[in-house]
Image (cartoon, rainbow, N blue to C red; front, side, top):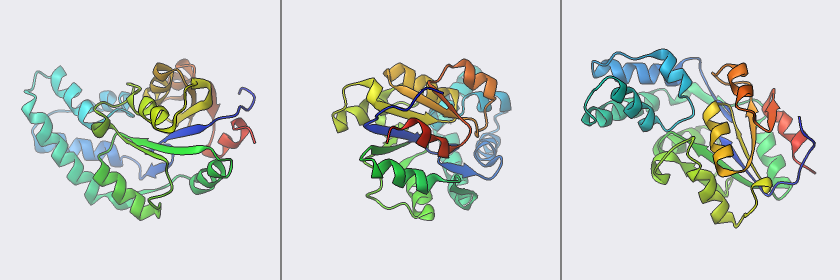
Length: 223
């Protein structure tokens, strides 16, 4: 792990990083949505694409099967309904609130990004007691126009907060797509080995920092 640095902003991923799900919740919501539309799914494909925008994942899988794009919206709508029905399956990752307040206590801008639609993000936020003023930036993949590993959310957050140097910005996630997003934006990256993807695969993406838990963020943010 590299020595601590002075950052002006941190963008956290949502599910798998700052929010945990009951085992198999997201994958189960995908599975049920595809089955409802008579589509066979590839679990390995879904796991390897965790971290990307949810509509993009659906589009990619359907494309590999030669299924018309019109089916995408049907599957996506079913997926969203499934997640809403299981929103109680989501809870804060251990230490999340403490880290959020620690980051803000250092006058570092706090952002959160997700491949879930805003309506579901707001449901999860309400359940966790996150207030509207907690984040200086909220990135929603379908609103930005593209999801990870495209760096659009990071670029948008940097522009909003007038941050020009990638060395002053930290992206924190738990998937290969999170690391790739950060690298594509030219910012620092930290991966937490607590998600659904293999740790060796994540290390092979060569993030700047590898963390065992969210609380390890304190070790790399200069006080």
